[in-house]
Length: 120
Image (cartoon, rainbow, N blue to C red; front, side, top):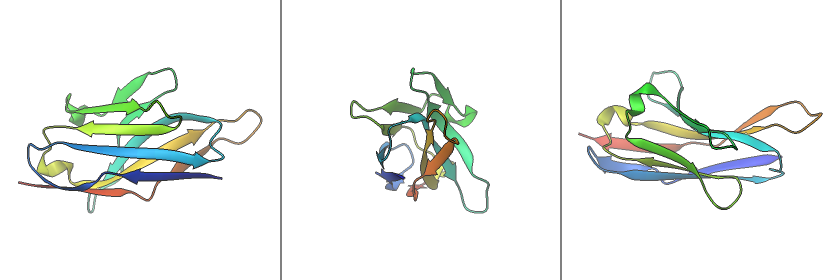
């Protein structure tokens, strides 16, 4: 079993920066892509950014160069640096980790989410 835990959310003002962290632990030996989704009230969950083991990165259009996703030196750690935050970035941010073990069914593990609130 893999456990995904996020941290780093909080209440900030528009224009501020915030850094989210995520770690996948437990039987996390086949973790492949990791990334961040977010869900604002009454909206669908949307992809923010993802990073593959080889370093290939994808960002949502709304990031507009404000966010940076990276993997830590410790295995299965993930970060999201967010700058120039806007009120519309207010959401619960979820970390996910894709498990891709040979001969096993692929699985995606999710964290419990961390609240980011940006006041204008």
